[in-house]
Length: 166
Ligand SMILES: CC(C)(COP(=O)(O)OP(=O)(O)OC[C@H]1O[C@@H](n2cnc3c(N)ncnc32)[C@H](O)[C@@H]1OP(=O)(O)O)[C@@H](O)C(=O)NCCC(=O)NCCS
Image: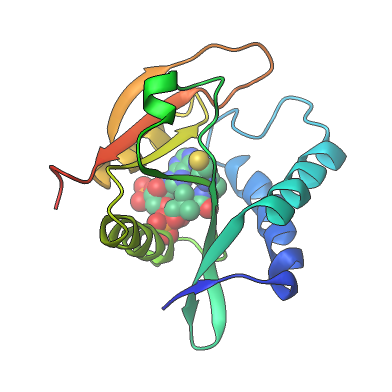
């Protein structure tokens, strides 16, 4: 079941971000690596949590996957793109891998966006992590382009056109 997260879930977001870092270190990718300032990472999560809605996938009373619905980032998208009706996702994490919980949440968020009359679901992700890109492609997204902005490693842009994709 799709739910809106509240203050009681804030610690869980921080915990899964830490666990994702450990998990990714076994995946042969530089995602979330390379001397990141973890205090800043967690401060950024808090900033997003204060500003935007996080949603979760609830099974048996437990949140098993979560993501943030944020404003599209102006440094990555053109003004025309920013102006389009869209759901923009970020901070996508599962508590446990290999169960499809993330995919279930993603599907529910896409359906919600469609029901709200949005034209697009969009996201940016780690530029060099081709396995992550493959994940989004396998879940119906198309690759848009990669933006190389100094200091931002998450410039690979993906989108799903809700008007053509069912
Ligand atoms: C992305 C995510 C939420 C998807 O959850 P899910 O649908 O339940 O899928 P799983 O975690 O079981 O992963 C499915 C497959 O995608 C791969 N995958 C997912 N995210 C990946 C990543 N960041 N890097 C490399 N591979 C990744 C998994 O290794 C797995 O591959 P396999 O089937 O060959 O074992 C979850 O994998 C996750 O929390 N990843 C780490 C954080 C992250 O990268 N979030 C996206 C930020 S844009």
